[in-house]
Amino acid sequence: MQDINQALLLLLVGMLTVFLILSLVVFTGWGLIRFTNNLIQSPKKAPKAIIPSPIHRIPRKQLAAIAAAIEIVTEGKVTIEKIEKV
Image (tube, rainbow, N blue to C red):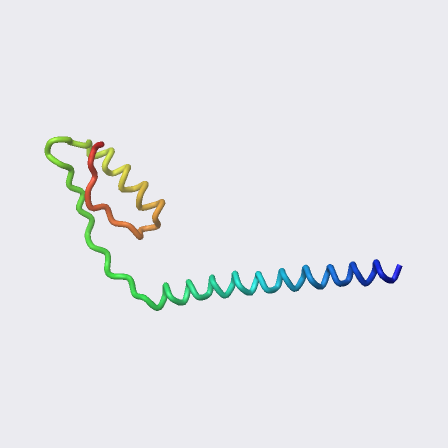
């Protein structure tokens, strides 16, 4: 009975050690990413210019919907330079 208790204790200690070390790796990586992102200053946003090509006109409502969707999905980190029909 003592052997099983010792084996279970060893199993528990090992699993907790692995969990703590993996948590430390994850949070250290997360902190490093946050630190470097805050350290590097992002350039000022350029004004958006959506210029459709004269051959293929895209309706203004569709352009506005596309721009709004991209703005929401990317949280404002992307600017639209050109939209073309494929």
